[in-house]
Length: 271
Image (cartoon, rainbow, N blue to C red):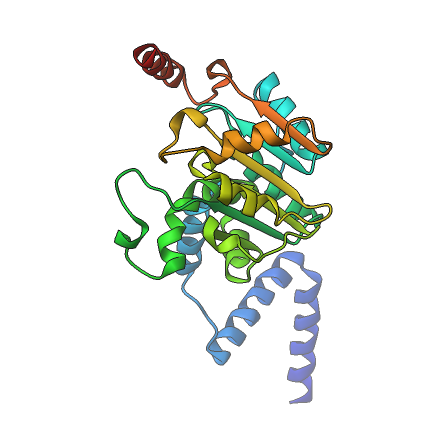
């Protein structure tokens, strides 16, 4: 018995000296251990999960935001260097995208702790109450464009986490009353052409020290009657320190050549 045991031990150490056998034996031992513990998983599940992650994970842009034309470059610099920036101009010029992307960069870098996206609950022919669900679900349709921007800049998983924990917030403009935007907040008011002067005054007086605020809109697409709060604010605040007013033209559109042609036709008909 002792002699047989000695041979077996010698053979065992010879096998350990063989790199090929050592790797093969190690795999067999690990496989047996997984089977004993009931931890063995079918390989096809791992492959499927990998495919799902690859197929459905949205692109995540790690590079800093790059302007697509000189107008966007001026707009981006204005947001970075001013407390309050107005972005005026037609559709397709990148007003919302630049603001959302800069807000995402500020959140990811830790310069801010919270992003607030807001817009007036004004629709063309439909009311907010027609949409199903709770207030958050009803208003979610108004931040879908920003959600796409955030997913592209931060990654879908990060965005969903921040939405659940209040780091990214979407809310109607009417719910801004009584709030104060502090230095750790980046606020974007979109579709501001549908804001009344009293609503705009309420919103602008929420701004605290060192807060970053962007107000975007196209005064030629207003859906409200009476005085326009965006025009009123621009006229009142022009020239104030810390306030910048940037105006895009239809030539600055980066969406498509068709958009510029459509704008030309509408302007010609209206003229």
